[in-house]
Picture (tube, rainbow, N blue to C red):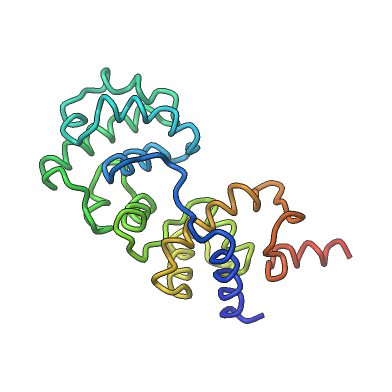
Length: 217
């Protein structure tokens, strides 16, 4: 199977079976999504969705975050991973949004990465989900699944290398959806330690499955 055929099979399957894939983080506006994604680093969406309702209720705008302090904000997010750093990031993020961006969420990856706690992955999520730009955020699921399926080369050893290959071979209009397809497939089917190959509908072009079949023969 050629690389193009592999990508065509991937896109065709998900367009037919999961056309409306989207983030599992709960949010109602761009600011809330930005905060949720910053909090979700190395943490589960389930955990984030438990802490954000009260957080968003009491800190609904960048101005509220900017005016808060560590002792006030920390209790809201103490159950997430790295709460100390994330508390500081959110306060700094709020201040920068107010002072440098007129309390609006930036629309470019470059501007988003200026915000405390926002790396390239988070910036890609925001530009993709909010602004529908052809940005591919590569988390552990995207990294693992894209390599197992053979969408990217095995020697793509960094998230940026994987991102570049995926963006190169996917049509621009499908990239925002493909990001969620890969994440959700990795989260529920192509698990890190024990992938559910018996449930997977992509094994006919999956290089990982092909390799495992050869080992068992």
